[in-house]
Image (cartoon, one colour):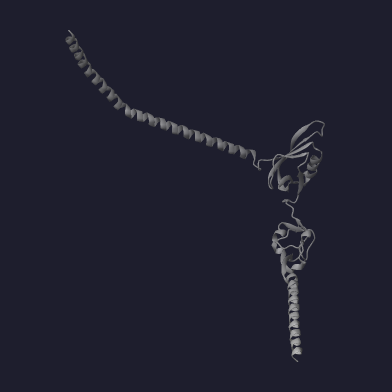
Length: 278
């Protein structure tokens, strides 16, 4: 009787331990599933219809939630990924926005302008690294007419974008009228040399000339003020000398009088000495 009771207690304890172990394993599995499926992340979807090639604005998008397990690299989770972007396909309300349907919006401001890429090469030279919104002049050297010629091909052209590789300057995209695009590409392909130099930031010759004249006037004013200061200093020194001169004259007169007074005494002393010798 005691032996059977002891065995029953042992089996009960073992079954309880096994039950607890199974429960812990099931709980961990459920937690893992909840971590993958239960944790939700926000992704951006279309809010209303978005036409193709239209710039996406904050009013065009909203957020939706999906399980973290199904989150992929192409999902858009940050507003920076939508900045200055357009969709290459039209989107309807609720459509998910993915990175593979987004494209950088064109930097062209005017409708009739086009962007042309100029990369550094054996024919294309840059005098210095450039930045977006700089203005450049394009100089070409060619001999299409049978003689060598170097001339200004375009002036004051806007730099729309800058191409870099590992922070090293490689080239630019310039914004030019549509009618000039074939000519620039022709020069880029067949001219002996295309040189790109930074222009005077769009300032006219009159503005530069007026600035030079202002600088010259300022220099003249500074010189005049310096001369006036030197003249005033000289006048003050002369006045000080004039104020000191009367006292100097009086001192000299006193010295002359004292010397004259001393002269008879010296003569009398000499005569006395002569008498003593005799």
